[in-house]
Image 1 (cartoon, one colour):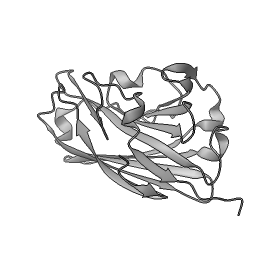
Image 2 (cartoon, one colour):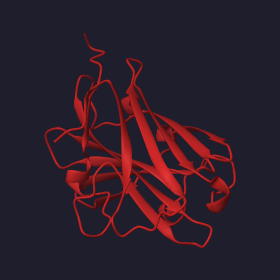
Image 3 (cartoon, helix red, strand yellow):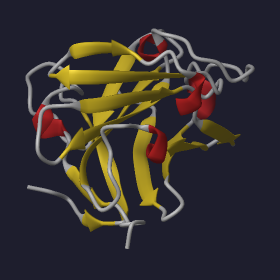
Image 4 (cartoon, rainbow, N blue to C red):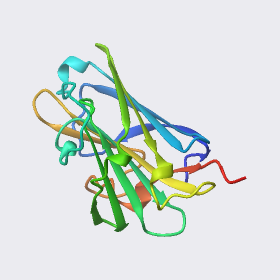
Length: 193
């Protein structure tokens, strides 16, 4: 069942049952689709940030394997089919983008034209990461379309343990690619009108 359906949505991520999360109080997320062809997602991690391993700020660049450490993820599924995109956003401002034909059947998008704009604000009790992507540069997404969105996060504690957070956990093991984890619906503005 969808959490919300509009051009703006907010939600609370939940920890997977098998995830250790003694220092994390919660993760809030917001998504906003604009008529300009941009989609902005914002995550607020509420925790004693000093008890987490947070990647240090670096030059924005595309890099694989961000999910091995603290990072935030967004999955964009199409309303009428199995295709989807995955974006990874690290607090370092490094990023990754992938395109899938079906469940886990795809690969990286190497083109810098999809590079997100990432900003990070870190305080002692929270970390907020905001990323904006140009969905008008993603050929599978059309104006006026309804997106099925999965929001998730991997958080690394100071001891190296990982906790897994998402809108919904439909599997025994954390699986952010599972179609049922795309639990948010967002109606994109129809710029053609």
